Image (cartoon, rainbow, N blue to C red):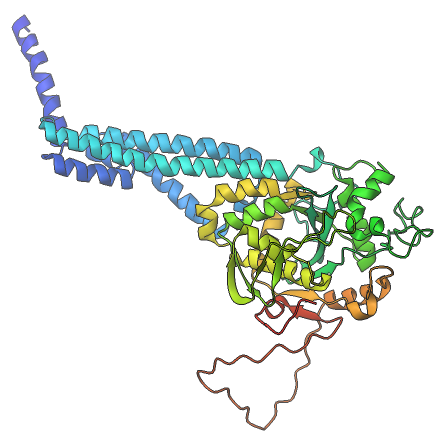
Length: 522
């Protein structure tokens, strides 16, 4: 073959290659933009249309495979998702995966447009194509960044609030099977503490003490409020504190009323008086209150969740507020000027006025739960239960998606707990049951069992609690009556007033928190 023939062959090869490339390109800039959009919506399709069939088929297969896996896991493997969402290590891996997928998606869009666009384009067409590709890349980068930030916020929240069992210490936490935590736990008893450690107050006092007893199969929950001024709080006989206070936490040589021996003082005072008596623990005050509250109610309390009031206000704002019924004027501020933790006597700065379905922000929701100037402790306890009920009902998927970073940040300030990371998936699953289950209030009968806080009748309360949380027997099938049942008139919207709750009975929180302006709060 002559030199001229070989040179001609070399010159003709590029022409054939360019001809094949042109056959895969769009004829106009507008069509190239349209095909680029398709390549963004179906990653890999643009590479196939641009002639890179093997690479395009690989990307397309990966894209479809990821969608199928996500759909399968989302529809059938909720437990796996819950376990994933509370594992700091897996969340870190997920963050890296989200970033890599986002970068890969952007590369696919840019590479597809380069393969699809016409070889010869006007300046206007080239500019339009570049702007459109830039817009697509921005549309991919923003949700990718938000997703990565959300995953990292979740990881930060889990790591800040929930410690692994090996890295945390508790003197009262039970040992459970991490694969099936509720296998031997028909009821989970959770202590909810509201720590009143605001500006101007001396020390930390747990003004809010509520025990939530949860049926682990159904999610049905009984809320039991303990009065802040109870004295003689008992300790279990096997507790080292029992030998110091065999007849309850009080000074037998002191006066009748002993504020420094109230229930709300135990969190701070007992660890000061007996440091380290319970053994190794990250929160001795919470362990003390767990033991005492459990002994008072006849329950084994498994875990505690301590709420900081400043964080509570933040989380209410993060979820967009809560809706409650206000049945009487609730004071904002105010202090009697006497008793432990009090400031100078002053009148309330304002009031939350009565009204149905009131939307409260964090500031007003906090005072709705805390306000007590001129009101009774039982009314305050009921408002606290209604606040928890309203908060549980206010959280929805849309709020979680749009405001999750704010909620997570507030959660770091809000919570302190001895619930270990290892059983968080089971806790989240149980929480979903609680949201859709029956939540009731257990009335401990103040008139008989604690007309004052000096000498509460704990044995009588234990009987009430045991009856309230006992498994309900199936109703006996009755013989149907031959008399016709009168049907309600169609279209009637009149509601019958709630009957008075029998002392010692349970009351559904939907009824307890309903609008009933006849209440006085006293």
